[in-house]
Length: 146
Image (cartoon, rainbow, N blue to C red; front, side):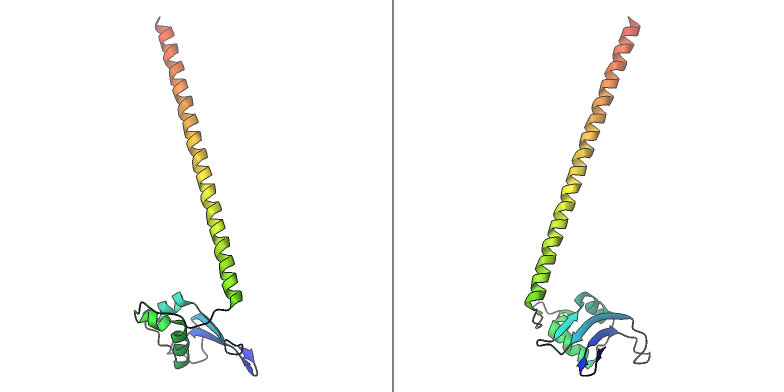
């Protein structure tokens, strides 16, 4: 990826028995060394999965995983911390996304609560109608006996 003097790299999973430029199993990240600070985006969950099933990272990818803290997490260290600097724009975007997610969850729970309330009201109305029908039937039966 990239162009001359502006390299960009994809972090990928490839079967070691295949040729180097062979088919990619999964793309787990991205690395752009040009800006300062460099852009390193690694899907931590997928990287942990592939390390767990025996994937062997190359030396360069291992260095990226050390920077993101994924190797330490994989080795079981509880205090694994990413040393990647997150830009202010990314932080703002993440905060905005978290707010949107919270609002969506609140709307969803509110809709579920109103649907449940409507269902309970409908059940109560049906029970009242059934009880009224039962009373009318008993009155009719009493009227026929007399």
